[in-house]
Length: 303
Image (cartoon, rainbow, N blue to C red):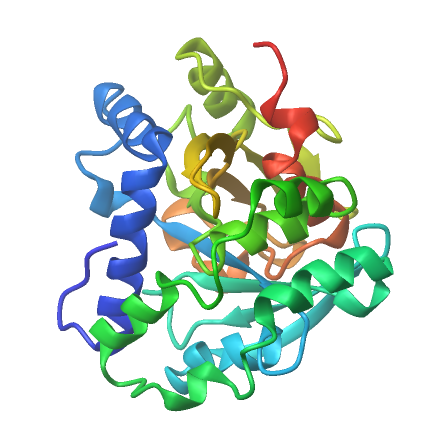
């Protein structure tokens, strides 16, 4: 994700990716696998389909706050998505040009949680009385990157984390991880054959011992069959809690997306295809299962 002729958004994306790659060892492992197979020569050749963030839907935070960063840098807000059982809402954001990844921002509908879960979240966020993004110079990439990696509230106790985890694993993830990059996504269709199909790509990962999220099947397929997605199981990270104890909890993961060619462009040669010829946007049914990459029923599986 290194860019020439860099603008502030380039530095923001690079800064996010550098920290994320340090925390998620499978990022480098997957890149090295593709290099070893002669599919790419470096990380910079991988096309990032999208990046994703998780937020809490409370005043001064959530999508309404977080999206300001990307809207300022030329992203366009697109379709909404709703996940009733997980109590989540989301939007995706189209980049100003194809050099940049799409952005997917979701938020927890905190008001739909139990009274106890709401109390835990409001206990940690009660000191936030205004939108913290409004204080940022969004042209200062270093400041924005620092903001996205700094705590907005106190580190929770493990007891509060566990209590929230029992009701909303998404909420527990955000309570501890805050605005860390949740995942980046490799554009599988842009890779060299045979790894430009998810089945073969997933086999490569499993042969290397990389665990895949099997919620809804290893490959999640949109209703039209044109968006196919898979993901790794989130890494567990030794994390320090408020009382000084440490526990292994879910961190971030890597996603993979294969966007099919739209029917009206089926006759185009492969070398003439661009993003405009492929399936755009997201699919709620796919995303619903991708969220579970950080859930306990995945991270605790025996591989």
